[in-house]
Amino acid sequence: MIKSVAKSLLLCCSIFGFACTQSTSESRESVFPKGEKITNNNFTGTAYLQMLIEADSLNPTSVGSVTFEPGARTKWHSHPGGQILLAIAGIGYYQEKGKPLQILRKGDAVKCPPNVLHWHGASPDSAFIQVAVTNTQNGSTQWFEAVTDKEYKQ
Ligand code: MN
Image (cartoon, rainbow, N blue to C red):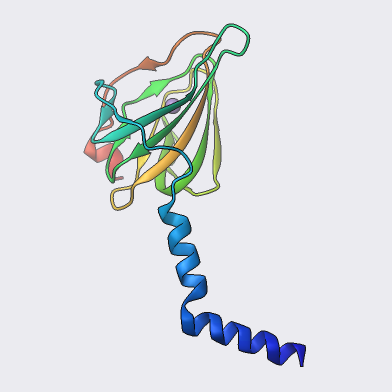
């Protein structure tokens, strides 16, 4: 009996597209505002930043939500106090110098050690939203050269 009720429910859901509608509306709603278009020279392609928390002397941690359009990425850079990336939506890339590219999906978390050269951004065909938690205690981000198309499309 319970089995058949569950079966009918499942059938109803698939007929009316309940599950489908739910996941679609969920993916359309972003967690944080998209913020402002990033106009500095530290990115390739189009990206947006919504600052969520400014670092201060008591808690020297800055938190920002970054939305990368497909193909957009940071330049190579390092953080003297390290950084944590939380993948919120889409498909993104993260790579430390000399290591394989990592693919990031919603729910993934990455800890980038202090002073390790790396970059992050969207995959070529999908936008990517990440929350970057940056420890600024030992100084601000050091920026280097752009990630070439060859490095990006490895
Ligand atoms: Mn970084």
